[in-house]
Structures are given as C-alpha cells and as structure tokens.
Length: 247
Image (cartoon, rainbow, N blue to C red; front, side, top):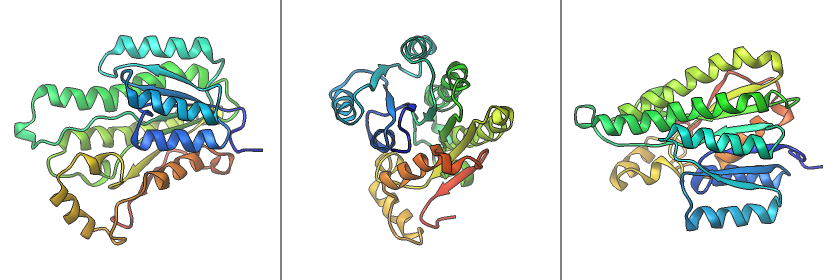
C-alpha cells in the first residue's frame, strides 16, 4: 500500500516549480491532490492533466492570494467537494528583490499578503477540515532567508521568518489533535528563488555552499512528503533547513 493511499492533500502554488514537485511526490504515493494556481494558464492545465494521470480524483482550483474573497471562495469549493483534508502544504509565495529604501509599499504589500496572509487564511479556513483527519499534517514553506536574512530581500525575509514563528506556535496549539505543523527552509533550488535572482549573484552564492550546487526541487519535495508521512509523527514545531551545508 502506498504511503498516502486514501489521503487528501492540498498544495498551494502547485502549478509549477517546487509546488508541482511536491504535488507529484504526494500523488505518486497515492494521495488525491487539490491543486491551486493563481489563475488559469497553459502551465496549470498541463500540470493538472499530469497529476490526474497519477491521481484521477484530483482537482484544480484558482485563487489570487492578493484577494481575500478569492481565497474564501476557493476554500468553500474545496470543503464542499472534500469531506476532510489530511495534508496542507502552504507553498504559494511571492518575492520582490529590492533594497529596503527603494522598495515600494505596493511591493511590500504583495510579499506580505501572499506569503503571510495567504498562509494564515488558507490554514484558518481549512483547519476544521484537517481536524477531521486522524493524523493531519501541515507543512509551511519558509526559506533560509527567514533564518539568516539576505541583501535586497527585507520583505521576503520578514515574511519567511514570520512563517517560522507561526509554525512553532500553531504546532503547540493543535498537537492535542494529533496534527503536526512544520516549516521547511530551503536555500537555493532549481525552482523558486534561484530563478528570480541575477545569474552572477547566484554563481557567487553557490561558491559559499559546501556542496557547491543548488538543491533539486525533488529533494525538497521528498523532505516535505516525509514530514507528511506516519514516520514523522513525532516531529512538530520544527523549522528544518535543506541547504547543502550553507548554515
């Protein structure tokens, strides 16, 4: 029997990159996926069909995380379709590279609303459904930036540090329901932040990584799925780094 046979999992921001890799790992282990994208696109449609080939009962929903009403509408559809949710992966995120004094209020708001408020609203709206699971799992995607900071990413670093605090506090509140809550803190990977920064800066950063390479999205996805498994039932409230030895 596969590890997540009969489980329902939702992965936000799962049409591409790391979210897509996590969705594929969960689906390959038997989970029914609730996929999410900010809007309909060729990319999201392609991902949905690929996941359906592995997990036929999976569904795709759309919500712009800058819009609270869209998040609420999506969660209502999810709860109407699925009796419970066993696994929640808060992966959707936004990044704006700009030095603090040059960063606009609008750029700061985008990062805050997607990374912090998106995680907050999705978790709060779905928690009643997760409480119906016998062993619920919540994994929040943070970043190494939330642990050590990074030049030109004050808003992003702030949001990812907030996610770590949120994770640790929520883990203590809902442990009594046998639900674990953990955060993952990746460094540079071949999906995500590494694609958003200048190539020269990335190459310099790689030299500071003991393993001398960026991480693979599949490596992060496998860590996430481990935390969602029964084997990780005694791990909660942790911010787990996957960074090639960087810190």
